[in-house]
Length: 67
Image 1 (cartoon, helix red, strand yellow):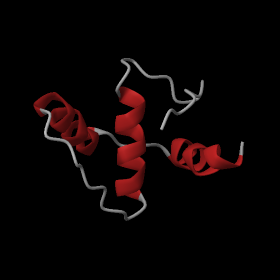
Image 2 (cartoon, one colour; image 1 turned 90 degrees about the vertical axis):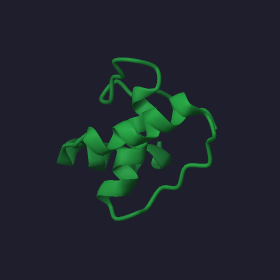
Image 3 (cartoon, helix red, strand yellow; image 1 turned 90 degrees about the horizontal axis):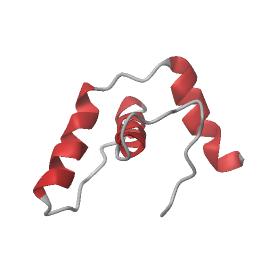
């Protein structure tokens, strides 16, 4: 799945948007599962735990599907 990068969620590196989406899932109570066996991808998945999204970012991500 390819996701359009939103200006309100500017990534500092290419995988950062994926980390924000993973963190979004965590913040709304979901338990995102990783299916990767790639060590680098696992590190990126775990890095999402260190991100705290603002209320505005959460609201923006919730509305992305409606755009």
